[in-house]
Image 1 (cartoon, one colour):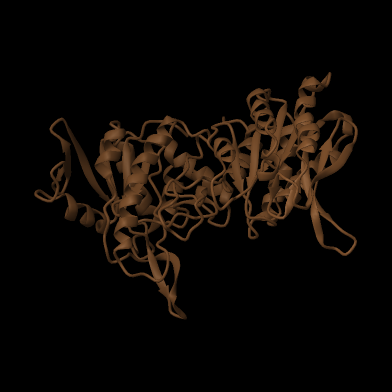
Image 2 (image 1 turned 90 degrees about the vertical axis):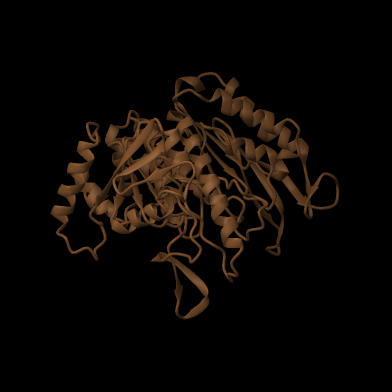
Length: 476
């Protein structure tokens, strides 16, 4: 059973509500328990406005064990150092932000009770203080006790900030993307997370699993193709995440490298075509980092990677209706991110890896606006780009069978790997020779699409029989 993460940072565009979300979570502590039961430490920043309502700067609000203290962070001015039109009071950062983090470790008795440490935010102004980031880093390195929860915020800058990049790269930090569309629900889920993590300890396994799924549905990942000229934000999510291992293990990194290579080829191909709209990025392969897969399940063309909630990659696919019954999971409800994440986790734990033959994303034009493309399961792009399936299979030698979701996926695979088209691998109708030492079986499963009028019960029976024969199952 994975544990609830203890270090959570929010990121998003300025003004989207990151601080409001944090403050709503902090309010849970004061609204549900005596203040003395949970230690509150750290700081947050807020706007400061003049008598005319105009913003004149920003303030630091420092938490102490019994109260808060407010001091200026920046004011309109030209005194160095500056960020934009604001002069930053570095001494106050050192005394009240760095001091708040150091005080958490010094105050007697704080290690004996749950602690919420707030770091809002780790941004340009704060980083002008030389002592600030070392104090943040030291806090993240030392706040490993199960009783300490860290909530922080990170900016979404036009250019990468080195210190922010270091936090994003930490395996023990969960970063959530706040948007106008998700901020209300994210706020409710973050309040539930704080309540479970600090007030209702120890939480039951089911409660842990549900809140983990909810939190993961907002997970944010940095793009690996910054500087490629795309109009999309350089922090847009471009890889598939694995909900059964939120710490990004080595298996995750290996899968990511295959997907990055394929995505690069897909982007290069799309750049040769005259489009008036950005090309959606394809979802990468799904694979468990806790169990070696036995089967690679392939669709024909790719799903678009959700830019705001990458954990929902593949969620629109009809295959989940069949897989839910194969792995004995509650029926998939596409409107419930948490339920989808749990189903996907159960499927990967069953011994199934998931990908597509082609990297081309299903898209179709909106008839009302020829310059706009809605990302839906429609017609694939005209220039076909092959996913690097041989490279993926070499990373997962436990896979012995490739199952195709319908005959169309099998036909596309045959087209590109029949003898003479590939120097590294060849295929017959039922066998795929990856190397002289390794040959995989090929099996066509009934299409999960509603256009296939086979009864669902029969689809499930055929899928289940094939997957169990291939060694899947055994872990529920």
